[in-house]
Length: 349
Ligand code: CIZ
Ligand code: SF4
Image (cartoon, rainbow, N blue to C red; front, side, top):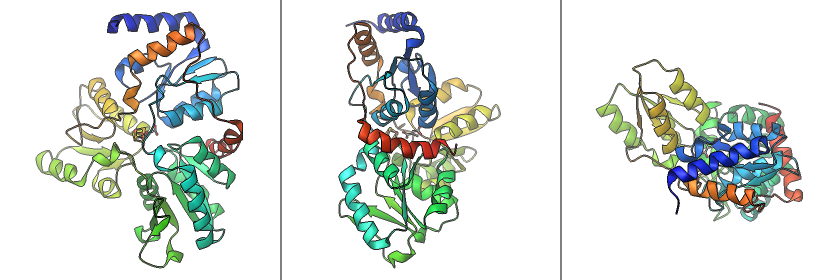
């Protein structure tokens, strides 16, 4: 095995020799050992936009998770190859909405609500789910534009099915003034709406999915912090539960959190509820501020962390040898429909 330094050297050398034929997008939740080589860092929206406008790179080595690499493949030209350095870098939230469950749910929902529903999906979903949404007139959303997209959706239909993250869906709808009583969770395992009242009153149907990282920030964490460090400002991602968002001082997308911390005055104190690698990086990059994780045990995204330096070196060396391994290709039949959903979003942001 090689040392960290040898691997770092190797990545540098390959990047140098490939020039702009090689492009490395890096998600904010990636490890430092990987993010140092990123040609662009961003949240999933920024990385999708960057992929869509890059027409030079032959190889896009995507440092993020599987659904993001799929999106990059769909938004780039056919000759551009997208590679994911470790195929096990999935997203547990995206995996919570399976296409067969979704088709089954849609049938039942159509029977219940006739043609009054529009599907929206968080970009944290498989290409197959995006295709389903595209086919049915809906769009993708990210945490930066969810509010705008929900407004857009309500111009087309009375009701929305929001996949796969119930928390982003609930928080966004609540932000738009929709009362919690008008929202209900769709349970994909029982294929039923979890709702006590008259289903006619429901206008936002939330798929029962969640992010295993952001669900780890709890009401207890907040109560404890308010008692022990009352002068800290709490900022969380809207993938946290509605209770946590309600008790926090601020909430917003990954990009919003970064911008807020960077703009904050020297000496300000922050407890952040988002992924660990990003929180640690914000701590290092803002030594003039006091920053901690809202959950003291920190919360890593284990699948994001599967992309590490050894996997990055491995995929670059294979490309150097002419082997395109771990290429992500979305079948045209799926990508044609999924792109409809992505374009409806990209048009509005
Ligand atoms: O939780 C994630 O995977 C997020 C926040 C993705 C993104 O960049 O929007
Ligand atoms: Fe998926 Fe959550 Fe990890 Fe994001 S942080 S990739 S939503 S499991």
